[in-house]
Image 1: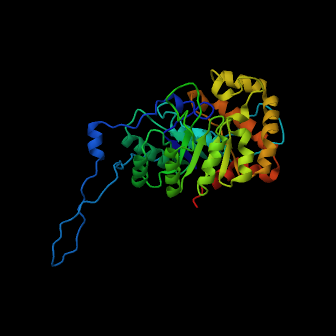
Image 2: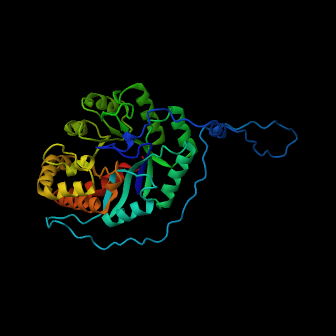
Image 3: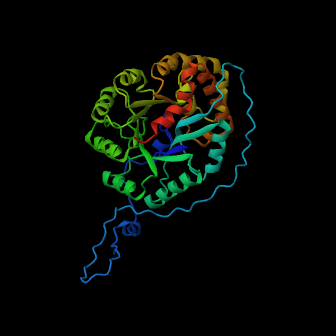
Amino acid sequence: MIVVIVGALAAIGGGAWYYRQSVKQEVTVSPTESAALQPKPQVKEQKQSQTTETPKPAEKPAVQKETPKIAIPAPSTCDLTPRPRRFNKTPYYTGPLFDAHFHLPGLSEVSVNNLLCTSDKEKVRGTIGFYFNPQLSLEKRLAEAESIKNASLGKIRLFLAPIPYSLKTLEDIEATHNGLFTGYGEMAFYNRGIPGQSYYPKSPDEQQFLDIYALAEKNNFVVMIHPDKGQEQAIENILQKNPNVKFYLHGDEIEGAIIGLMDKYPNVYYSIDAILSRLPFPPADALHLSSSENDYVSKITQNFSAILDGAVNDWKAKIEKHPDRFTWGTDRGGFTWHYGEEVSRLFEELSRVFIGRLDPAVQEKYAYKNAESLLQKK
């Protein structure tokens, strides 16, 4: 299953594409759309009786469900021939993967079928992804999300990024599209130097966010957060206040505190994704700070062994200490080239060699089982 977070398409280091899109404002609709979204009276059929009662209008949420146009996918024509490896490092994990941090591109740039084909090549059985199309109205955006989920035959499931919406709109979306979303996120609190495109400088434990977490508990949703530096105490506060909500964290800003948080709170999880390809020199974020696919491939190829050793040193002991709480992911998103064949092939190879270095008892947990468990309803 691929899980998509609607409202945030992608992010540099956990929010690049998404944070280029101006989503700070409340979602607005045109007068025509506004009228179409207003509650309409409904008359319920009454059984015949001796008395006549005036039917009462049924209340509807402000967000109405538009029937999506669902394309039935043709049988896969993907070339699933095993892809050649650039390096012959062993041990090498060969089992399934679950991409637990993925930002969907604009579908005019890369089709759903192409994304699914890439997943099949990587042996990815599902993905947690983020999707937002700011060119569409809210109504059409939700309809497109429905079509993506259905066209993927269940491999794509959706998260909703709450940043553009009021709490009432979030409630209405879930009321009219129950089952479409599985969580809220990516909720970004860090500063990437682009004002107005994340919650920065707000803190994750402010009341407006506590209200969202309460709604997440009501909806049985996971909450995915990318904190800023210095927000460890705020994260601890929300974990304490919301013990029934699963919080899924990501980003280097919080990685130094993640083990301490996991030691104390069973409802916190962490995605190890783009940081797997962290370079041994600055700027370290190879995926989001490379200028092109060729630039990324060149950097990873030239530094493959150092990158692998760094990832093992940074994460092996942590994963094995909390084997049920870490997930694999890619954090692709921000540039169309992120979805290219060479990026896919090289990151998959690096990931499989890294997983092969883990204790065999935890390899499958990190590779895909923890992500699937994270998404299970209580």
